[in-house]
Length: 231
Image 1: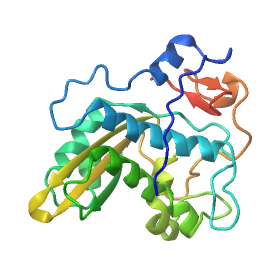
Image 2 (image 1 turned 180 degrees about the vertical axis):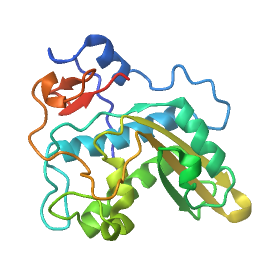
Image 3 (image 1 turned 90 degrees about the vertical axis):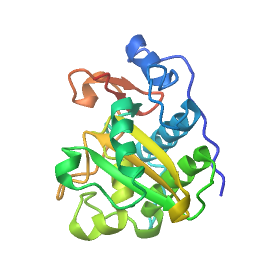
Image 4 (image 1 turned 90 degrees about the horizontal axis):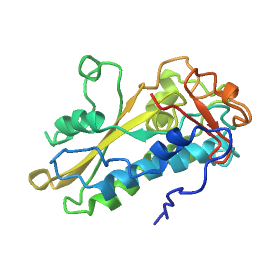
């Protein structure tokens, strides 16, 4: 299944700071100087797919196993982080798969994905990986209380990290591993999510004012149905 990703370039609403808005809609990696096989186009796909799904959740348009997931009151829009990319690249280029230990992550969230097509286009791999993480919501569903438990983390932990409310930074990497006949993808998030017994996100109507974000530096974008955190 091919998913069309649209990058938002519209004019900011009156409730969001113009500089913060421009930070979220510009090419995310204009300041990235990493020479690791990633490209701006691939990074953009990772960022757009994550924010596309976060927006669906915020608006109550995310298909749950039975109906739709509840709306998100103050989900943050992700922005790209080169340092996170560098961290996760160190992990995926080992071509071993699996997650980094908590002692290495140091508070970062992490999603890992692999496919037995080592020469798959990396932009396509970016689409497929985030699609597969998100689709856990439709396949398995989330409990009515919208909290992380040991049971649902095993089935929907990738999805919950993709839409974790307080995560606002994202960095991803894709590496071809011919010897393993696989292509590995990894994304890391700050602040990390999937804390047991915590809400994935606050349930409620999407923010209408900056105050609704309950974050001192955040701005509400009613157009995006998300909060923008410039920090």
